[in-house]
Length: 155
Image: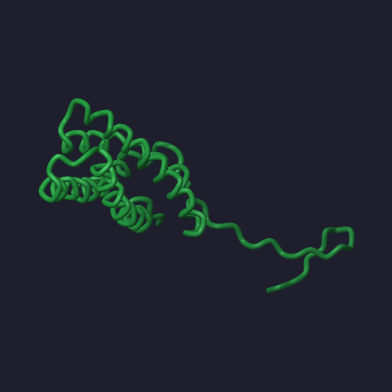
């Protein structure tokens, strides 16, 4: 099937590879950079919000609030830019499925803060944020796998 095509002017051209089916997800090598950029931006936003909320709230309340706010934006951005899904069809379902990833991230980050409270009582904000960065890194791996295989899976 590697036929040489003609432009009509006698010049040979290579055949055009078949287009991906409509609605097909981009390959992983194209998804990972977008997922990582969105993840970094979401993490920076989440950590900044956490630090601000820590002025008036406990570590757990600040973490829950910051994660919840950033998770909705993260799911919407990944839906559009990483997995190429546009329009409103399935958006609510994707947010609800994204909530599972949020709960896993919440469990990891809350656990890290609780462990930190036991190991280093009265830890500085820098130590708290460092613990959250580690927990968020683990949650990111889980989030990508869930997004790829379950949340934004194309049929």
